[in-house]
Structures are given as C-alpha cells and as structure tokens.
Length: 617
View (tube, rainbow, N blue to C red):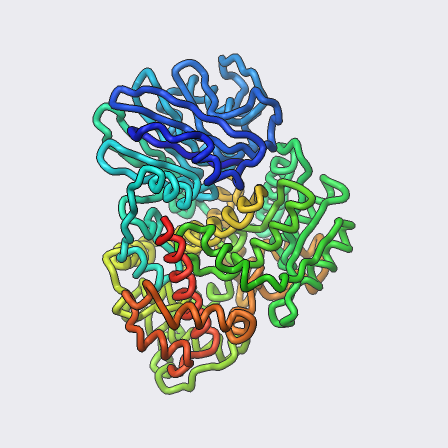
C-alpha cells in the first residue's frame, strides 16, 4: 500500500514537494522516476508503506526495460499468477508480478485484469510505444484521480495531492457546481466526478490509455458486475453455505499470508467483521482486534465486539472517542479533498489511529452488505408492490421523531413508495442517504445521468433485490464506503483489507438465489447461517450498525457550536441553498425529523469545511 502521483508536461517539481503531500500514505520510503517523452516531460512519484517484500529491490517506481510501473495496492494471488511466465523475477513483490504479466501479455493484459484478486490502482509508462496506462480494481477499493488540460496531466491517489501539485505550478482549480449539487442531494460524488472542474476519477473496473503523441485518453471497462447477476443461480442452501465458507476462508488466508507484517482486524460487533475475526483467529493466534465504544447505548456495539473478542481470544482494544472531537473533525473531513458526508468517517479515523499503534494491516467487513443483502431497506424494497397501495398515507401521517422505531421504518417505506411512483432516482436516494433528496433546486445534469442509470437497472430484467444490490455496489460502496475507509486508514499509514471483496466472492455472491440473501425479514440470510456455526446468538441476531455515530446528539451537543458557527457565516453553501433556509435549518424552524435535520446540517457543514481547505489552495 502506498501513495502514487505523477505529472506530465509540466516543469520539474521536486520529489520532496510531492512527498510532503502524501507521506502519510507511505512513510517508509520515497521514489521518483523522470523521463523525456515524445511530447514533453514525465515524472512519477511514490510514497511506500512496506508490507510485502520489505527489501529495497521492491522499491518504486519500478523499471524493467522500457516499462516503468507506479502501483498502489495488493495482489493477493500474484505468486500463483507468476506460474508459467517467462520472466526473470528479482523480488517476490506483487509490483514486479504486474510487470511480468505485462511483459507476457502486452497491452492485452488490460482485458485480463479481472484475473487479479486484490485492490489496486496503477499507472504504467511504456517508453517504446509512448503510452501511459491507468487502471483500478474491479470494486474501486484503491483510488486514482487525474487532472487533464490539453497535453498537461496530473494524477494521484488523493485529491489533496492533485490540488497541492497544481498549487505548486500556480494553476488554481475551479469548483464544479453540478457535482456539488448532486453531492447535496445524494451525499456522495457520482462515479468519476469530483468537486473540481477537469479533475476526475479513473472509474472502478476500468483502464485508461493515454497516447503521448496525440494526448487522447480513452477509458474502457474490463469487468461488469451486472454480468454475474445473469448467470444461473445457486438454489441449494447447503451447497451455497459450503462454497461461501470455503471462499471466505481462502480470502482471509490470502490477506493474512500476503503480508510480511502483523495483521489485525476491525471488529464492529456485527456479523461481517465478527465472522472475519472468527475465521482469522483460527489462522493467526493472538489476533489483535479494535472497536469503537459510544456512550450512547443506541449506537454502541462494543459489548458485542468484546464478547466476540473474548470467545476467540483476541488481543482486543475498545476505544472511546476522545474529547478532541472539535479539533479533529475539520482535519478528518479535509483529508478527503472533497465534501464528505459520511459521519462514520470520524470513528473510522479514530479506530485506525488506535490500530496503527500496534500494526500496519487490518481486515474489515466492507462489501458484505452490498453483496449478500445486509441492509434493512432491502426488505422494504421487496415489499414495494404491497406498499404502493398505501403510499398516499404518508402525506397524512405525522413525521416520526425517533429514528430507531418501527413507526419511522414504516413511515419511510410509505415515503419511498411515493417517490418510486414519481422518480426512480429520487426513490433510490430516499431509501439510502435521504439528505436533500427531492430538493429540485439541487437537480443537475449529474442527477439526470444518475436517474437514467437507476431506470436502466430497474428495467434491465434484474430481480428487485439485484436492482438494489447493484445500485448500492455502484454508488454506496464505490462512492462512499470504500473512499471513507481508504482515507481514514491511510491517514495513519494503515492498510485495510476486505476479505468479502475477493475476486471469488464478488463473482460468487451474484449467483445466489435471492432468498439466500434476504428471506422474509432476515437480511444476509446465508451469512447469518454461516455465522451460527461460529458466533454467539446475540451477535448473529444483532441489527446492523457498523461504526454508525450518534450524529444528532453530537450536533446538538459537543459539535453544536462548531457546526452552527460555521453555517451562520457560510462561504459556499449559500450558492446552493438560500441563506435564510440555512438559518432556518440551524434554528430548527423547519419541522424535519431530528435525524434528517442533523444529516442536512452535516452535509452543509462538510461542504463548508472542504471549502476552507479549497480556498487555501
């Protein structure tokens, strides 16, 4: 794991200047590569977090002949992929394996990237053919952003690094208002968009080819998750259970064995991370585990995590969030380089900081919900045909005041059913983030593109459950959950590995019959059946929370002054929402449910905090 960056057709920028922007991603070593290209000048920069092959031979950027590779990530099956290659390997690093595969297949390797089990983002320079190649892993665990203006280009693992490099060259970025409008309505930036003009993400499961003679960039997919939902289904429960257990064990083993350093695990108290700890502890005695403790009992799962830790004899640490919240929150949010709505970034930041005091690699449960049907709203979506009959009731019923209540659950189902009739994009947003969904002043061309994607998914012949799983993988997982964990962990030079996102499990889960994922009111049915073999009943039956935070309590308590002071003198939010509307939200003049108001305030607050950093650049 590391940080990567590069600049094309700019004047020379010192290594130390770029390294200072991404040292947190790789404090163990730094490297630079420079080359005169057909049309100008190229620089590669690397910040190394040494985890696999700790020798200096595995340093990056790595050169072999006419090729130079800049790689961020881990390929867990890379040693198996070396078999049969006619290549003189000098290290046992996965970086060199990629060079060996490229030497063997050439550019055709881009269409074979699906053979890799791992997380990755890489840039490859081919001096002979004068091309730059870019690629990201299939689910988008590892980030890769780029700025392009005619023949000039900057690319990096983080948006803040791109901003810093452009600041060095005195090239200010402009705000992309369309992308921010969509952020306010959805809580995330859609697929390859960012809050900056001319800055984009290389999409997950895609590769890019930049011709250094013409400076034309073409981006193409090499993997489509949808195709696996069209395969024949596994219907037998025992067969599915055995396969799932075998593949999960294989995935965990690979993620432990491919580290030359100690591996630990995040343990939230839910079944995903608990299952991983149960299986990992069999492979690695004295496993270290980490969780967050909240004083608010409605959000605290630490007692379940401690129960699991005790059962499997892990070296467990429960962390209570410090009193430095007011000082830390702006720093945490600004690390994302864009407005970041997901408040669980805060506990993720703290638990990563605690873990880094002991190790450099952790396992987590990311991806299980989006592959195996873990969200409670899936139950509601499957009930939609019946709920549609009563959707008009939502306009007559009083708004709920308590989030964790049966009344709130059914009220939201009725609301979503009403949205389903009118606008499928709005229906999806109401069922997931539910911030400013339905605020037509935020409607943008990005929303129209998103709306068409949702419509194609709902009308594409997929089952109702598959529709939501695919949309969540493409939006919630890709645009929120994975970026959240990447930044939160790499801020502390900590690598997070996600066993549920292995190549094999990503291909296996879509082939399961729907009732093996959601059965009646039971979510993640198959994983719960597997969990019964290893975990206590209370853990198996516990409702999903993850590292969810008591946001409304924070905004009304410890963070009240910080949030309200920031929003009472807005610098950017009033571009998108009238100032009197913002003031009414701050004063609780509108009759929004407590949790919804908190989410609205938080999304605007995150926007303002990002803007403070943007203005510095």
